[in-house]
Each structure stands twice: as structure tokens, then as C-alpha cells.
Length: 107
Image (tube, helix red, strand yellow):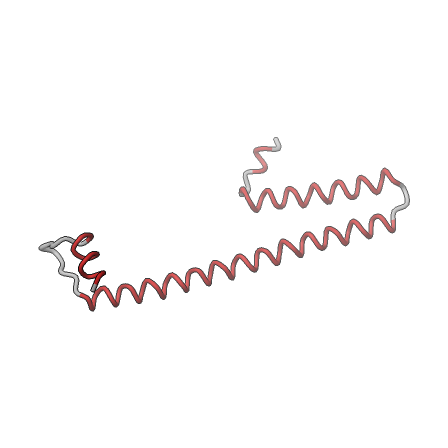
């Protein structure tokens, strides 16, 4: 009753084009709640998938660095291997975040 008295009179003034009834508002409200929940669930599922993929990349990077430290005895070669892989991961994250415009930035 408060919404009908306060909301419809204030936000939807009488118009010759459409007359909004309580049944119409109830239907529209239910539809909007359903679509909002559905869209939010879809966004959260995408976020979880991206977060999982990002964590996997970082885990593989950590595994690679551990293997390089264990298997390559020379310090300069070890450092070069790690530096290139960390640089590749940084470029990958930059491309994911900002798009593929990275070619123009590096020329």
C-alpha cells in the first residue's frame, strides 16, 4: 500500500499512454528479481572460473621456478630462465586485462 501510494503516484504520474496497475508492477518486479539473481549468479560463476584459472597459472609458475632452481646449477642461466617465464606471465596478464593492444606498446 505504501509503494502504491508513494511510488506510483510520484514516479509514474498519470499518463494517457499507459496505466500501470498493481498486477503489472507485481509481474515486472518478479521478473526483474529473477533476472537480477540469474545474471548475478552467471557473473559469479565466470569470476570463479577466471579466479581458478589465474590461481592455476600462478601455481604452475611457482612449480616451474622450483624445478629451475633444483635442476639448473648455474646462477646466471637460472636467473634468465626465471626472468623470461615471469615476464611471459606478466605479458599474459596484461593482455587479459587490457586487451591485445600490447603489440603497439612494445614496438
